[in-house]
Amino acid sequence: MIDEKCYKTYLTSLLDGKRSKCRDIVQKLLDEKIDLKRLYTDLFQRSMYRVGKLWENNRITVAKEHLATSITESLLSLAYPSIFAGERIGKKVVISCAANEFHQIGGKLVADIFELNGWDGYFLGANSPVEDTARFIHETQPDVVGFSLSILSNLDHLKQAIEAVRSDFPNMDLLIGGQAFRWGGIDTIKQYAGTEYIQSLDDLEKMISGM
Amino acid sequence: MEEDQHISLETTAYFKDRAPLLFFLLSDGGQIVDTNQYAKAITGRHLIGENIKDVMVDFNDSFHLSALLKDSSKEHLLNISTASDLPQSFYFSFKKIINQIVVFGRLDTEELEIMRKELVSLNQELSNLMRALHKSNVQLKRLNEEKNRFLGMAAHDLRKPISLIIAYSEFLIEEAQDLLNTDQIGFLNTINASCVFMKYLVDDFLDVSAIEAGRFELDLQPAIICEVLANSLRLNRLQADKKGIDLQVNSDESLPPIIIDAPKIEQAMTNLVSNAIEHASPDSLVSISLACDQQFLIFAVKDNGPGMSPDEMGKLFKPFEKTSAKKTAGEKSTGLGMLITRKVIEAHDGKIWVDSKVGEGTMVNFKIPMAKG
Image (cartoon, rainbow over all chains, first blue to last red; front, side):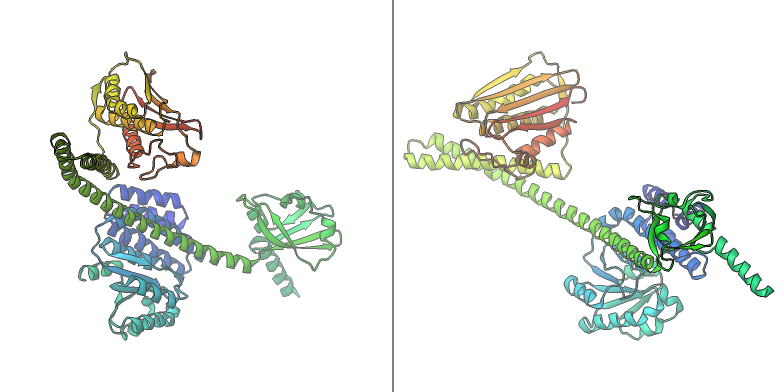
């Protein structure tokens, strides 16, 4: 469990750009054998949601938001040796961000949650061109493909990506998620058959355990 | 008119207190008479009274106020030293107004925007590569463990049939001599020798798979080190005799007992002496020395073989790597002996090293602490 005091200290350090303080907190939690899913949801996801809200409400600058994101991404690597070490169950997922989508951390957290559940989670990164994503899917032959969207104005790029995957892989299960959908777009996504909207990492966790 | 004056005062106040633009008012000689908050914040200095030249980063002594004042419409790219110790580039304009000089400096926001976007992108790429690297490392580790398990299992299962072939070929060589002709006896000897080599190979595979799987454990017991050396040389002497090599042993018989895994140290010594014999010229000398000081037991073996280049020495402790140094009688080897030997020495908290020069032979040394051992 991550107590409120620990979370607040972490968030303050994150907003102040104190990378080494944040690193110490995460390392201590890892040394205490924290459940990695809790680390992802109760620390990384929660703090980044908060950072996003502060930015949307003009309480912090975009520079501070970028710094917090970059610190969080660097801290994920502390958990990687444990995340990738688990038993594999022989299933694969490819997670990508639509073209022009420069926010990637949400998608990366999703790929890591799949890894924690024994899947091989391949993450293609921000602003992935449709052709590159399609090529990688051809090479990897995953069981599921996921797209993350943070900015709603990129919805058209996401639709293009979905249509490209659908055309090459008509039966591929598609997962869609991201902060963009707080502002709409879910109905658009639901028009595509075999496409599921995932609201949070907890929901993702439940969905994976049912797959 | 009063309103205009008010707006002008407000603008000046905002410009001096908040605007992200450098402003300096200089005397004729370049001394800073007035400046704004941004300039003070970015340089981390009070600035008033300093010469503008001292605010600039000027490696080539190329800052000349008179030259900069020649064309006031022109911008000049100059660097200033900042509070963060990282220089910052600004586009400066210099204009003389009566007896004073007004200086403005602006950042290239377009360039900064490009840099910001690139930095975010590069950081994301780096972080994604880091993730992929971690994932690949775990996958490689898993494959390596799989390989070791397979190697261990295969070697273990091969040991018994090989031992049987060795035993039965020896029986045949001893008991069927009268029934077989010379060629047939020769075949049996070849079968026997090949199987003995195969057994060494399998034993080395088992050792290496145990080492790589982290199952290399020591059975530490007090031992008389001279006896360990004598045991190891027993096998080496046969090998040396075949090549007419004289094993010159310099061992201090009064060495105190030491706590070691004796069979493993014996295996290490045998490997090193055997290597020296293999690389020594026929009818030459291989010197072996065993001594101790206050802290360490020190073992060395020297041959007069072809020696090795530094590149070849780098390959010496890698599995299945064979150096170009020719064995002087075409002896076979598994390429695993040095790796196993190093592991044995390191497991005893010791160190192994090689001195060699092409054409001058090779000396391999190891030392292990007397205390831990």
